[in-house]
Length: 467
Image 1 (cartoon, rainbow, N blue to C red):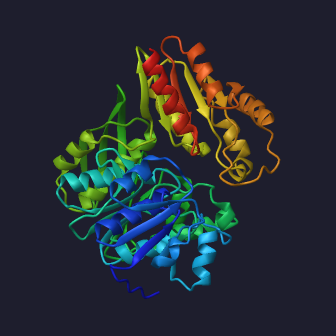
Image 2: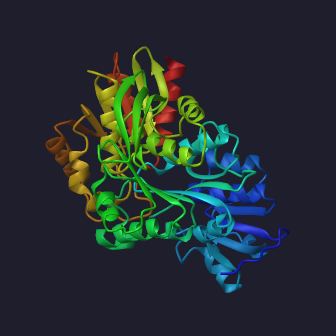
């Protein structure tokens, strides 16, 4: 699709407060385009960010303001019966999907495209931090708020662009890249792919799209990535992982006070080099891998090794990735985005390694009935390193209950994970539990992609006020 857009025309985003949509809106605003948008959300940090840039936001989807636009941008979350979308179609407005809009903006840049089922946001944030501190001034579009930026997007001065790509609807295939990353491939988004075979084939296509003079960085610790790369005939890839077979091996991992230190053994072009004592303000084997791929991506961009190490050590994190929201004596409360069994296990593993012999309480809000159904057994087994699980009602995200019984789900979690499970109905019951049961040195982790984040932050603020 050839897209010619006058900067005097309004670009209207339907669902502008979505993390992906807001990133593009912010970038286009910085480029000088007139941006407006609508959203059902009444309050969020993303909306605050958009409003601080004087971007006009319309509450709900019933306004006729969309008729003033020259271009309408929608995401895959916008359904065909959306009133604004229907109105735009009726009046023959140019309508473009979010991923296509992003591709138009980025495909003339030197793109680093980050893909994978888990870890994309953290990897994007790590690479962005390294490049910014190396004064390479990249354009950044991320799936989470980078603490050092206080934003999920930034327009850079250079040709570099660092982009978190969305595989959920196949749109990650739309981008041209210099460097491509695949962190892992997990059973997810079957509503779009129908089966796991199709998903893996799309990741193969993603890797194959990288030009011969570019590089793919792939994690061979993940069995599905390893299977995909075995079928790949080109030689433009570098493997990383804890495996001794990896071109870049992460090893000698040590934990101390919410930080990690590790070494890298780099075996490329028949040469071996060891880089010692890389330190990062994150915990967990998964984050050691995320830092490893960020390191080698920056290395291939010719950033000096000492600068990379310094940037990783100074990294201040990403919102909702084990974000500390409350601390009192030894009691800690974290907020985390984990909403898939693999992510839950990774977070709990990180915490048990860092906080030895501490009681761990997980507050879990499942996200989407369809996800719980397709990964039921995996969810039930994923809390084995949590002493107590507070199970919240499922956050539907617009879906109808397909027969999931919350009490039965809790019972299965207790059986399969050998954890105590307590069903809670709402924010008030979580607050009551915490006030009664946080006594000395418990670690509390609130997990989920729905309203759980706002719940735990409100509760934490009350705890701070009331002592």
